[in-house]
Image (cartoon, rainbow, N blue to C red; front, top):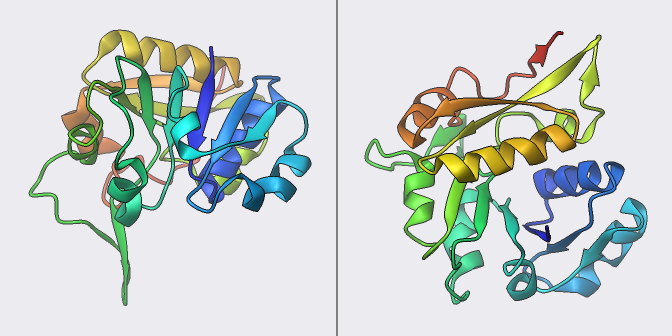
Length: 201
């Protein structure tokens, strides 16, 4: 399985760090090109390579981890996805004078909006509820494992993402479809967003 990460901010870096620690190779890309990521990939170590967005987008599983307000630009012009899995790790939030505010999506799940931009992708919402620092830290905590929530309309894609989550050492909990994800894990507003939860044996 080839894995690509579009976005090298806090969440993209945290995902890359966990993949590297688990010995899972991946490529990471941003809008400024591979040369801007040279120090980051040296820090992450073997297995993580810097590449162009067009190359990262052709992986079997692609994390989309850019700020919400630029996601459409980040994926603009990319080839049809051909059934590959895209993990929507973004939150539909806009920073205003009073902190984070939800983007006006007309009551729709943010991942449904994103899916319209990604022709042929099998989209899954995941990796968006933990703060970047918790996501980058060891999945084991206090004798249990940190929880990552998954939602989406494609059951087989969710199963594949859940398997990847468990390979990384986390526990995957399937919340259901995108609408249930909107209610529970979408940030801001969802009661599970930002919650650093641990499941015990």
